[in-house]
Image (cartoon, rainbow over all chains, first blue to last red; front, side, top):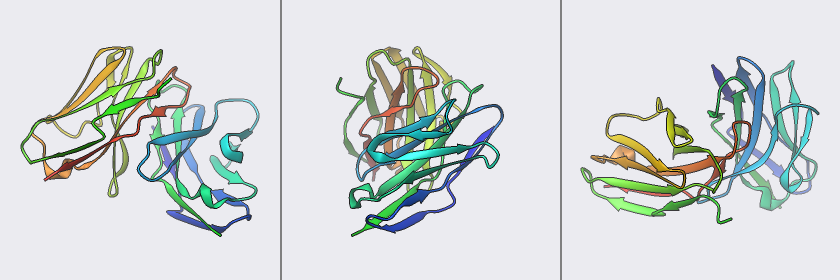
Length: 114
Length: 113
């Protein structure tokens, strides 16, 4: 079984401040972890992934995420938020033994205010 | 590459009518996924294919829904008969390998009156 929890429905930050969007997961086996972003009336876009190796993963648009095995977390971070980062963010997980099928979280709406 | 292509982008139909949604995955991708997104239920995986073969259809809500992938470049999701509760945005996504991220299409917004 695999599951993802995004504990915050909404995150609000001021432009220029650091942002964190939280994600915790549960899998049987080793996790493959992903973050996606969805802008209004668009499909999801891939941001970054953790498969193996370095726990700190860097992705598109200055985003990064840290894999923490002991806390089963994969929080998305950015040092300095932009208004254009405002969107819906999804965390997803797939067990390495589960071919193809990822489980997505419920999503977190990020609002960056000028 | 043009990315994942979905058609139509918008569909408005009346209850009881048949609806067919279409998807062209990215060339060379061997996984194809169909999702449904609603405010109430979030993003739900309906079915996915590997090399044109359906692997897991446990997310298909009921027998009114069916999906096919006759070849590597085309898939359909059919709802017959449609009901108002089927109103949602339906996404198709493809992936080149098991461990890779998924590439989503722009979605089809379905409204059933």
